[in-house]
Image (tube, rainbow, N blue to C red; front, side, top):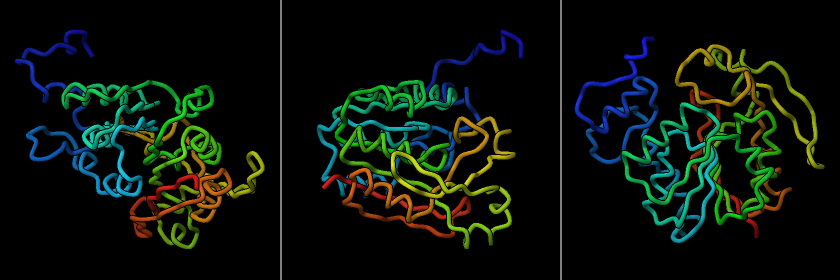
Amino acid sequence: MEVLDSYIKLAPSSQNALNIFQGEWASRFAGNSSLVAGTVPLFEDNRITWAVDQLKGVQGKDIVELGPLEAGHTYMLEKLGAASITAVEANSRAYLKCLIVKEVMGLQKAHFLYGDCIEYLRTSQRKFDVCLASGILYHMANPVELISLIAKASDQVFIWTHYYDGDIIHNQPHLSPKFTAQIATEYDGFNYTAYRQEYQVALEYAGFCGGSSAFSHWLSREDILSCLKYFGLTDIQVNFEQIDHVNGPCFALVAMRS
């Protein structure tokens, strides 16, 4: 790439900014927007609407969002009245896309941090009203540590995640080879089984939005729920369960400290 390829000769526009990452966007922008990006309606996500209802609203609340990806959920939380959203993103390209969205959509309450959310939660002493962790748990090398840190950071959490179910996954030829080992292990007194998942060819995609290692560990559905309860988030509501999702079974949940 030549240095002059970084310049543009068109009049300024929001679409120009989006085109910096042309072909890498997952999200479709909100409403009847003429902006061309991805196809997934993350700016109009029913999972977030449901979660906010379970949380009795987010008006005036301080929220920490782990892995904002392209700031679609951040946008929704601001529009629903959050006082502040601290969004932590470890993927540099996703982080820059979030900054583009902040400018294009005029976000005022969101602050995006570039760094690892585990390290952020390990070192931050801040307590938040709500933690949003959508599409991140199954990308963790140690998902139980993430749940334990979330439980320290907030008494209310929304999680959307894939989970491991051997009967389902090993009947899917495109999924089964990705799971290479299972390990009985423990973290902070919680015993569980970790199922190693390899990203394989997905690592070759410029728009890759997985974890920071070549593998992650998935948890079973039962272990996710048990882990939340173990760390004090005992009031749990589940929705949007999809056992036939192309990327593996998944569900959404809101968990609160009783």
